[in-house]
Length: 448
Image (cartoon, rainbow, N blue to C red; front, side, top):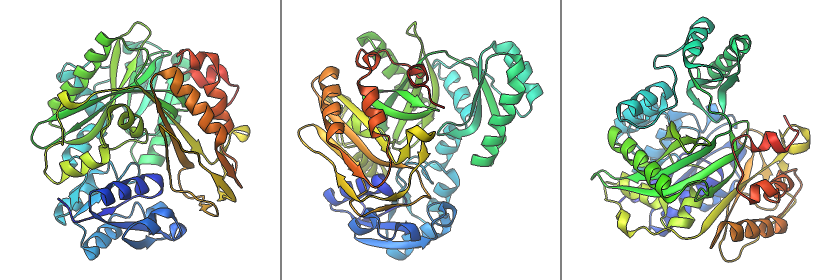
């Protein structure tokens, strides 16, 4: 087992990893930008190293500085968390050259599954259901028009290197295609430095259902159930829950088997998520694979009792998973709400600033993943998510009531948040009855 791990991230996920390491008796090294000098993760870690200015390119995305800090501190491994360098295959290659373990899959696997077109082709070969779409990269609007004519409208235009909702547009007819393709491609170039696009059939009003897996180097795989992540705004998840109420036992088994088939087809190791679109008729299609821990992993931990971060570390150290599938039992229902420092009344504009007063409730089945505290200054340089509220209870109705009660007790003063907006969603009759799709927000709210 590792003696010291460097966490190449910030915020609540860095704190989450530090706590897991502490419970395992592993020392930790935090890296921080100048903007994060007073951040909680820098205070909780055993050591902390400043790696650059506030801009992510000068700090959390600076591979050389992160690796230099790792070697100088004598850390044997790096945990990337999510975002930043977590799915950067070049960074993993650099770790391998420096004889530093990367807590995640190998470089070749990240590159293979990170390219959305190649990932879909791989799933087709493995006979995992895939949304009909292009099998080759698309670079021009003319190529897109020919492809869309074969696929049939509406079509989804996506960046091959995409993620986080960037580089995604829907064209409902040929008149919209050229403009939407150009916009999506420009977003892709700006966000990922890649103009490679692909098209797929747009599945209207689907649910976004993802299956959590973790696999070790000995060939063992755990499937930790599914999460319904359908409540989204501009492809950004807002509320996640497990299990998905739209799945029958038969469909749940079928989706889990498809996820395991996908993992075995690529020889995957460590934590990963297979994401599916589920249509109204009960058919599901592979969408993408995330080769990292995800923001919403706590809901899977609540219903399964498995600590995913600890298992990640064990796998990266060459140890087998601490249990087998027969040892995993699922109980109850879990929901996660993402509290962001943003203003829903002003186009969800980020609202950095000083948190003047803070109260985060607790109680049975309540978990708060956060890195903020009273007096903390939220910097303007990073993602606006500041708190993840996760609750667990015996069934969905009880979990919703627990979440409503918990959010009603949260106090965050000094900055605007989306807390009231989340509270309103939870009280929507359609949400409470489980009538949710990826169009839920736009159908229930007049927002951009």
